[in-house]
Image 1 (tube, rainbow, N blue to C red):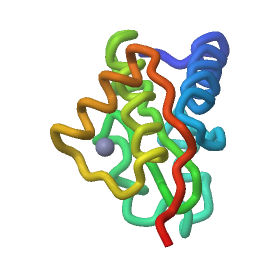
Image 2: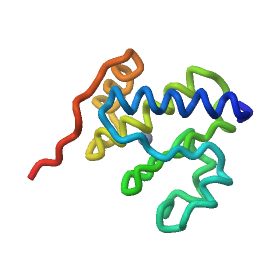
Image 3: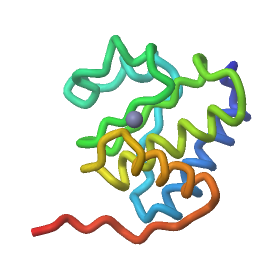
Amino acid sequence: MKIDPELRLQILEKVGIYSNRFSIPEPKTLLTTKEVLEMPREMTEGRRTSAYKYYGVSYLQHNLVFINVRKISDEKTLENTIVHELIHLRFPYLAHGKRFNKLVRQGLRGKTFSAYKKRK
Ligand SMILES: [Zn+2]
């Protein structure tokens, strides 16, 4: 998809809505690889020059996500990617897998999640 100001706004709006539903602070959201490269190195370490390969990347330590709009071809994949990355932020301990995918599906359907509490 080609990023323009309107699409940018739409995406940021969605990030806002889902962040609310998932009870997470709204992350800073990057939408181009250029923006990834412009961030301080320590924030994007490990997924910096490789970010373009992925639909999305979450930088958990920095409450930062990258949605690779250019690589994404349709609305559905876009929505999926947004929810996928935000589920990473809400469930930082959870790896990819069945449970993760289930949470993404629930998120897409509008489910809300209470705030994440670190176990002591
Ligand atoms: Zn992931």
